[in-house]
Image 1 (tube, rainbow, N blue to C red):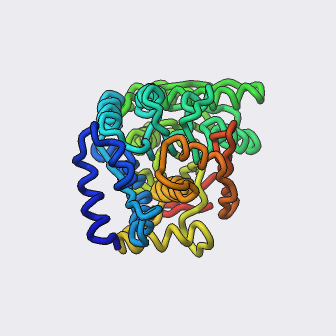
Image 2 (image 1 turned 45 degrees about the horizontal axis):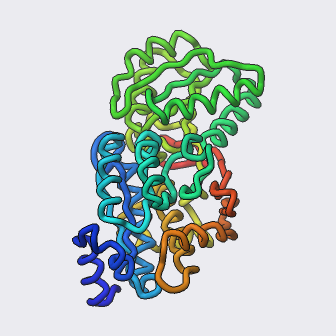
Amino acid sequence: MLTRRQAHLALASLALPATSARAQERRAIVLGQSVPLTGPAAQLGLQMQLGAKAYFDAVNANGGVGGLPIVLRTLDDGYEPARCKANTEKFIQEDVFALFGYVGTPTSVAALPLATAAKIPFIAPFTGAEALRDPFNKLVFHIRASYYDETELIVKQLTQLDLKKIAVFHQNDAYGQAGLKGVVRALEKRGLQPVAVATVERNSVDVAAAIKTLVPAQAEAIVQISAYKSCAAFIREARKAGYFGQFYNVSFVGTQALADELGKDAAGIVVSQVMPSPFGTAVGLVNDYQQALRKLDAKAEPNYTSMEGYVAARVIVDALRRLGGRPTREALIAALETLSGYESRGYHLNFSPTKHTGSSFVELSMLTGDGKVKR
């Protein structure tokens, strides 16, 4: 548990004006997180926050880092870039120590120029988009594989199964375009092109136009690059319209959220994963995650999204523990660049001064009709 003094200082730090920002760094390590807590993508933000909080609470219960508690300030952006930008401006004004665990490509893309201008580290965004990886940015650190990695594995498996008529259903924004580009890139390597492409607007489940485009194309498989509610809506409507091909999704869909949305209709849906499996008999990193999650909320069920939040929190804390004296942003960046050695069920994490993408781990999982994940 936090001491009374630590708890008081952590709460006081949230009310400090920007003019007291440097003192804030000495009282608590405050991280700013903008995620959807409401709206159609809410489960992604809630679970990312939950996993991070599970680890930060465990650290704070043992005295924090160097005697400083870690405070996670989470603001709701509803998965809308304008709201995320406003949240980020607020964090910068308050001089949070780092930006952490943002959720989504369009939101992260909106926040990145602000973080770069303010020289604030931008750590573990929940996105695999190349727009946040290329060109290299000294302030940005990724703990997950890219959408190029995920779509390459998806297309590789489909073509190995001799399924070559592949269509794409994607969100009409930076996230959807990133995933579409990954699929096209993987197909072109094999001399192929998508047989059809259709979109859905962000935070919408209006898939009628996409159904009219994709179902008549008679694709053998449809790769989906969207959030869980729109993907679930498309799967249901496509099946009603007579489509019985395969559905593949990238990790951002929110695996458990998608399974919950579909219920028994989830059977056979494939999702690429960039974190080790959070289920079953666990060892090492996964075991630590399960124990921390149970301690925070005995009713919380393990899932891939909260697992990613937990891993992200663990990474930043490991870096903070390597700092000597008063923590600074420059020292945090240098410490992150020394991190290596995470390993759990095939998941490894390695950074360097010239490599801020720590993992290329991807595997495929399949949903069952009872809301479970089969690997």
